[in-house]
Amino acid sequence: MKTMTCKQLGGPCDLALSGDTADDVIQAQDRHLREAVKSGDSAHQEAHEAMKGRWRNPIRGMGWYRDTKKAFASLPEA
Image 1 (cartoon, one colour):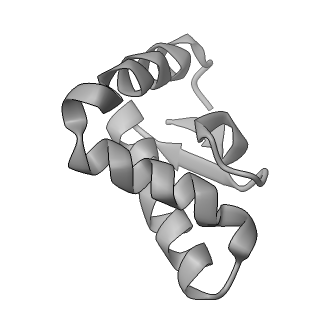
Image 2 (tube, rainbow, N blue to C red):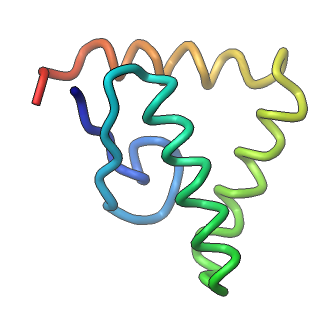
């Protein structure tokens, strides 16, 4: 299991998100952003819009996805 923060994934906070794969962590970030915005946290709005854009336009989002997978792979196991 590895951990990345919301900030490492493009968000504004230091919440730790853990998973066995980069995809697990990305999905946790997606849930975190949705919940934060839903609860009225405007600081997460920009990152949430960027994440929604990556899901809607996967070809354009592939650069971010590849970079995130590389960053995840370079992390030590927790």
